[in-house]
Image (cartoon, rainbow, N blue to C red; front, side, top):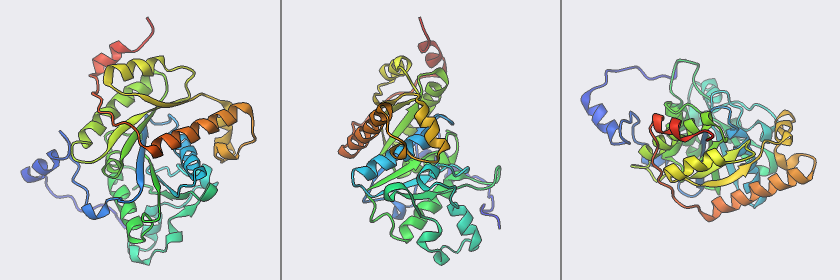
Length: 305
């Protein structure tokens, strides 16, 4: 069965309505009934392959260590956001909806929510087959399903682990729910260039939604000099830095969070940093309203003198 609604012509009123949702946006406003009202909601962004899922899962584990009830939602069609928490690739929301011919009332909670490490609840939104649909639809259906089963009422923290494609509807949809968006970036040109595009997208969405940028998480980085240059030029700040340690690579291979690995001085330091980041986010971070640079400006800004 196709999950894509029939295509109809775009008319002028459609464009006018869409433009209200951030300059140049073709996203439509979220159904107000799908607002996540009681939990603190964070959306994790960054270039593809930069370590968003590693960051999200270890941050979820850290929140759980602080006694918070945590729900992590993977928003990438490859549905690998939560495997270090659950130790497997769990079925996606789209998979289970398709199995009941999209009659969501036939689903039980255990059909699409899986308990992971230290009680973290895990959901993989999934996505339509390649080239056949929008990831934004999938995220919306996931939140709708969670609301129908009252799962968000008993949750303290929701973390959206967002796919890296800036122009996809699946990228934008979590911004309609999140209180803070966080950007994971390495200290290199490619990930900072992508971060600049993400800054622009979040700024557009913040015109009509409560989401604000909460800062940068430097990942796989011995230093932050290039990130610091970008932050100074745009008005951002770095919340935490995680170095490129072999124990992080090994944790992914072991399908485990960093809180389950054999203890070592370097591991304990990273665990403390994740716990500190969770505490900072729970307490509330500053709202940043950075201004993205033009492509040529960022090209000229970065690099060694």
